[in-house]
Amino acid sequence: MKYKGKIVQWNDEKGYGFVQPVDGSQRVFFHISAFTRGDRRPVNGDFVIYTLASTSQGEMRAERVTYSAKGTRKSAKSGVSKVPAIIAVSLIGGLTTLSVLEEVPAFVPALYGVASLIAFVIYAKDKSAAKQGKWRTPESHLHLISLLGGWSGGLMAQSYLRHKSSKTSFLVVFWITVLVNMLALSCYLEPSLLPESFQPLLKKYR
Image 1 (tube, rainbow, N blue to C red):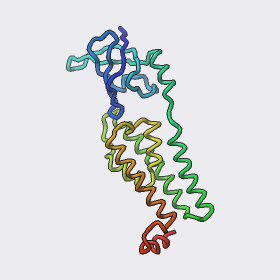
Image 2 (cartoon, rainbow, N blue to C red; image 1 turned 30 degrees about the vertical axis):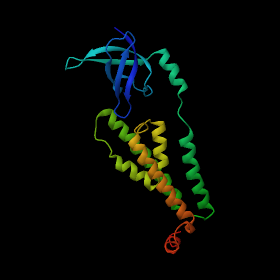
Image 3 (cartoon, rainbow, N blue to C red; image 1 turned 120 degrees about the horizontal axis):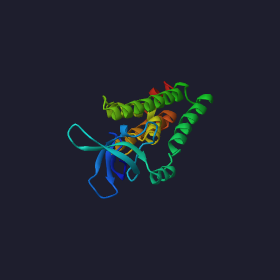
Image 4 (cartoon, one colour; image 1 turned 120 degrees about the vertical axis):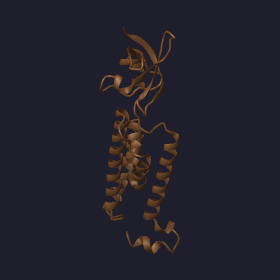
């Protein structure tokens, strides 16, 4: 028998949430694996159709979950922002242009490009691990790659993969790493921003 309900208290990072039946009965647990492979990630407020199955503990859970027509209409409105991609292309493209003009060494845009790619891959693997209940990547590793220049890749992963995009404590540290990295890059591009005692050392590596 099929039931209809609305997703409530969805935890995208851990890949599970609860469905509140439209008839007002007790909500039921569901895991992301209950959706058809290839479906978009759910969000709170999505309407779904599902069947019920009993767990080994005798509790009910939603299975064979699909979006109802109402849920599908909602997904069409909630497109993925293109801003992270624009930021990434602008940053790496700008550094590449400076490299061609011999304003900065070639390793600078290469560093940002490679670090961003690595960051995106790490985010993707961590999201997959979260869905499958496997070993997770420590958040400190994600922040380190961001600090080293991979923050644009991390920003794209947060938007396109919807991973680590709603955890406030993580995002606070993430944006701190972005600010620190951009400050370091600004000082590298313009050594005069640093105290005079540090300028000769920095110019040595330009």
